Picture 1 (cartoon, one colour):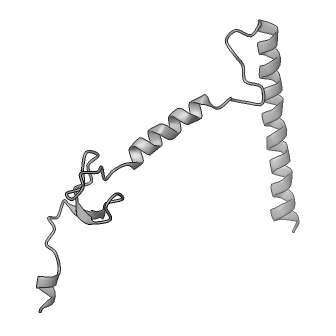
Picture 2 (cartoon, helix red, strand yellow; picture 1 turned 90 degrees about the vertical axis):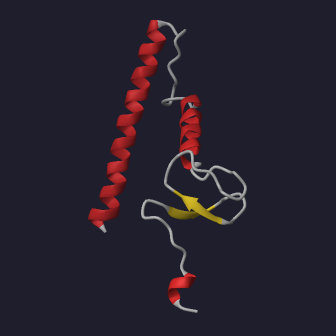
Picture 3 (tube, helix red, strand yellow; picture 1 turned 30 degrees about the vertical axis):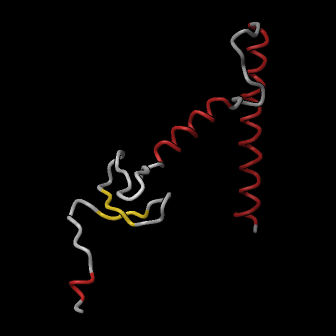
Length: 105
């Protein structure tokens, strides 16, 4: 057998990708709606995972003290102030650690 008969002919705008579901190689044209030729599973799942991760991140509290809509004005100002001080403190400590780690040693 020669080398040409052993290689698969794939069009220039397509490639092959291994399916995460069935483990077989299938044609992939790098489109979001591409599916496996063997089992029908989606080949591009990273976009859905990225969107799901973004949705989970929205539910996490922001800052040391999350500011809620129903908080009183003084409470909101206090929480914003504490969150700002926390960010500044973290930046200063991070700079000191970086300075000691890279400059002093």
